[in-house]
View 1 (tube, rainbow, N blue to C red):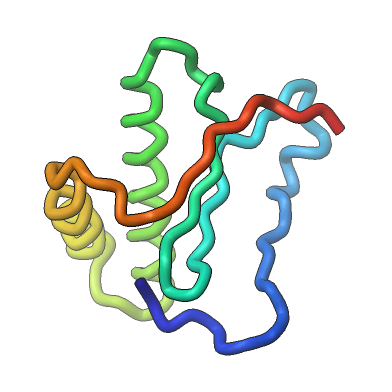
View 2 (view 1 turned 30 degrees about the vertical axis):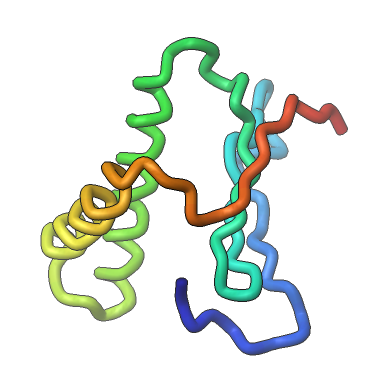
Length: 109
């Protein structure tokens, strides 16, 4: 997967600052690399039968990844988008899950 932090402490990201103040908010996906494997939990009910919304979400995540890589010194956001798209296209058609995943219902806190 990736050479993420070699640390005994879990690196958990902050909740975006807009979320606590929002009238409505729902978490859609969490993704971790655990012992070298991708582990994902997602809210499979979030968009109901409109699976194209998941496609839009994945595209937006791809743009955020490319923008972040570009801001961290990689050359060119468009080149980074192409790299993300290449990785997606190479992995997606294999139709195999090389990771563990769970679909969960919403939890109200």
